[in-house]
Length: 179
Image 1 (cartoon, helix red, strand yellow):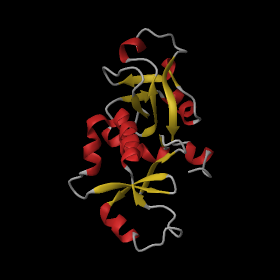
Image 2 (cartoon, one colour):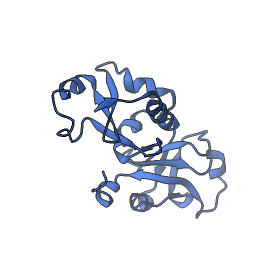
Image 3 (cartoon, helix red, strand yellow):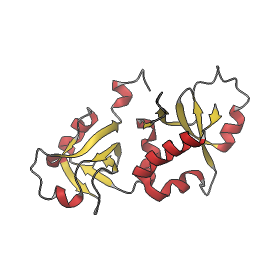
Image 4 (cartoon, helix red, strand yellow):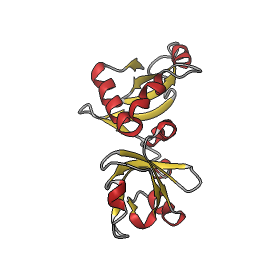
């Protein structure tokens, strides 16, 4: 377990910025307790500083995980958000999409959000920006990237893709070995 290098930090923050914008500083400087990002076995963890200091007493090879796993770094140095980041980014998300109950399961099976399944979308959502996908009960299901802006969504046909799937809660079952 070690702190992120400058390049790794830049990659993580650039990816998080797509979803939560300037709220990134709220992730680190929380009013109740400070948090930090740590790297362990190519996985990035979001950890309370108090817990991180206690974990220094555990040997690296014995440490399995620490805090919330928000993503992993690829061999090429790119950062990929995983479904573990959903709780973190859903608190501060700038843009949101709500899906109808009929298309909830399709999204949880790994499919994109179609116009026919779109219930609501945040106003002024631009194209190709990060969004958190919610059900109608405001429970975060996953996240993705918008394929169309809010204005373009109004005139789409029902089978057009509104948001590309990136991660969802169903991954805990589908890819449990990789998480």
